[in-house]
Amino acid sequence: MNKFRLSLPTILPDPPPIHGKMTEGRNVYHPENDPAFTGLSVNKGIDHPETVNTDAVNRFLKKNQRKELTTEQYCEGILSGNRTILSRAVTLIESNKPDHQRMAREIIGRAIPFSGNSVRIGITGVPGAGKSTFIESFGTHLTNQGKKLAVLAIDPSSERSKGSILGDKTRMEELSANPNAYIRPSPSSGSLGGVARKTRETILLCEAAGFDTILIETVGVGQSETTVHSMVDFFLLLQIAGAGDELQGIKRGIMEMADTIVINKADGDNIHKANTAATLYRNAIHLFPPTMSGWIPQVKTCSSLRNTGIVEIVQCIEEYIELVKKNHYFKERRASQSRYWMFDTIDAQLRNNFYKNKLVKSALESLEQEVSEEKISPFAAAQELLEKYFEAMGKH
Image 1 (tube, one colour):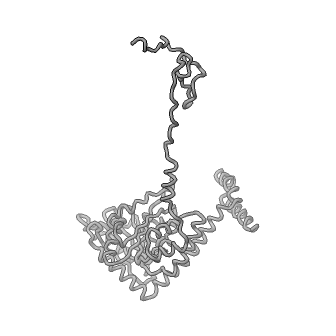
Image 2: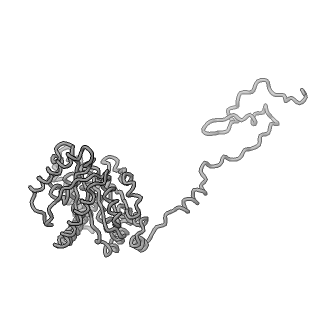
Image 3: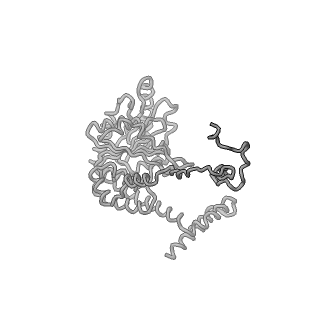
């Protein structure tokens, strides 16, 4: 067997400094290149395949790429009640891209003749009042009556990250699976009153899609929350009992605007507290001046968990709508709201155009620094920025 033994050097030579090949940033010694191993042949290996199959990825993306729709296709889908297309149209409305905004305006313009045939209900309340649970119980009752319900849940946006969890839909499990209900969570995006800036347009699209009841759930409660009152027919304030002085955390403005106050979580040991709270609110309401609608605000109690008191709330809303349609306040209020949103849109567009102006952007940072260092008054800095803006506008 010795005649078949290879004759190898007793001690391997030190790796030469140049024979190695560069691999992953290091010189790797290859013995087949060393003169001591003359005659040793090594088959060349294949190239390492790519980790990602580019062709497969491209085929997948091409197959699953969302097809862009035309304005006509959007309108046809919305009017036919296609919820997927409705959701995509709402996304266009919420987008800040100029192309999306132009298309959204055209879609809204075509949808307006088919809108206005719903009852718009705004629901607000202190954090923890059970707004989402109430909407699930209330909405399920409406859909059982044959109503088509759209819920626009406004989720608060973070002041730091500007993001939103958009988790309201997960708390309405039964309603989200209801074929007669459509739930659309949207970020507040820092807009006044916690109401998304584009909620008004979303309402019009939902009405054009055939929904006859629109619920708008707003963020928390506060003086700025009154913005929701400018886009709904009926304003419902949701409260809870047993949280201290029931009237302490409520702003007078919201109390005056509420068409009905509902004390939620009136179940179990909390029933007595809920009834006591309802009495306090009824006494407080009598101190407010008469409403323009001629309606006397009501105070109700309910349990969203036990589904008690929901029927009485529905009847209360129906009585209100019947009254305001009979005395023509319903139509007058809708017209007033449209005028309000025209001026609000003008204000928003002017503000946006102002801050995008090149002269304003170039001077804003330095003036902001001077104001911070109290070298110039805020009013003088604002006037200087406005003059630059008007100067730029005069050149166009």
